[in-house]
Every structure is written in C-alpha cells, then in structure tokens.
Length: 264
Image (cartoon, rainbow, N blue to C red; front, top):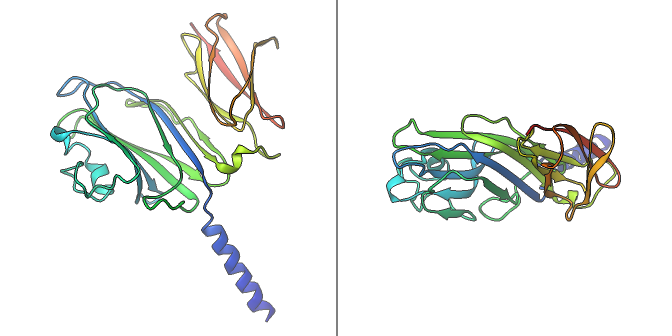
C-alpha cells in the first residue's frame, strides 16, 4: 500500500513539473544588417515561435507582398502553408502582425506572451524565436536564424553574438513572477552597444528598480530610479571622457554590476 501511494504521488509530481505553464513575456530586439537586392533595400520578413523540436507555435510578424510571396518558404511551410506562397490563408497568422514588403532594414522589437494560436499558455521548456529575412530573388539573398531560450519561472536574459545579418541582439524571457522581487532574484541586464562610439548605451534590464554608473575611482556620474521592474533604460555618457565605467543595477535586495566601455 505504501509503495502504491508513493508511486501515485511521484506520478502526480512528475505531471506537475512536466506541464507547468508560467505566464510572462519574451522581448526580442535586433537590428538587421542592410542589404541591397533586386529592388534596392526592399525586403520581406517573418518572425515566429517554435518549440525545441522546431514545431510551429505562433507567428509574431510577417511582412511580404504579392511579388514576394515565395520569398519566405521556411516560415510558410512551418506555419502550415506552401513554400511558394507565404501569403496563403493556410499560413497561420493568428495573433500576428502583418504588413507589406519593407522598404528598409530597421530595428525590430518583438514580444510574445507565452501562448499558442489558441490563446493557451504553453508548457514551460525550451523554445526558439526564428527569423527569416529575404532581400533578393532566388536562394542567395535570404537568411534564417533561430534564438533558443527557456520559458519558465526564472528569467532568461541573453545577448546573442552578432553575425553578418543580425546585430545588437537582445532576448529576455521575463516571467510574470518577476514583477515582484524575491530574495533569490538578481537584477540582470543586457547593455548595448558595448563599446559605444557616441556615448549612448541601451540597458535592457530585468528585476531592477534603480541604476547607477560609476567611474573607476568610484565616483558616481549617473544615478536614477527605474519606472518599471523590467524594461529599457537609455543612458548618455557622451559628455564624459573615454574609458571604462561600471553600471550597477539594484532591486533593493541584490545588485549586479556590468563593465561598459566608452570609446568616442
């Protein structure tokens, strides 16, 4: 009897762990490298969520036009359509934004609330946000890249490496529980560009309510309160001399420090 009860409890606990569904927000930002194709800097784009095995979860954004319907074949197939027509109604666009062919390569800011196309919060685990960008006819002027993250009760803050097509990349999963600071939660951030050549830094932070910048002799040159527990803070050090500075983020319980380089 004891063995049977223990086995039942173990099964229930395993089910709970397997199907935990943490609410929260994924924020993904990047700046695409500008390319010139068949029509100047015009380009098409799709951004979507996949599970760790690559199965489709939800489209976040698609930009394409009638003359470029065959330019997003990877997303089109993954979302339920055909590689030859990314504008087909069979491509799943539930909850996504859409638009015409883009005329330039500008910074992108995408969010995901952790739900699938039915509006249900998906199980915690490893997911990917995938980008397909095409700027030329044929298969030479296109790129597809995925960024893996963990959706769960803990924050996942990343600054993936730049490549020839994607720069200034930041990605963070911010669980809903992170809106209230707990004793084991660190204030974390991604700071970019770093180094900077104009003195301007972007600080994407999680679990913080104050920011401070000090020089190497310990003098505070900037100090400010943060309006939200998570967000982006822009800091301007253009009036200061070149060198290394320390950015300090605090949530009142714990503090994290980051080295930044000013090289005008």
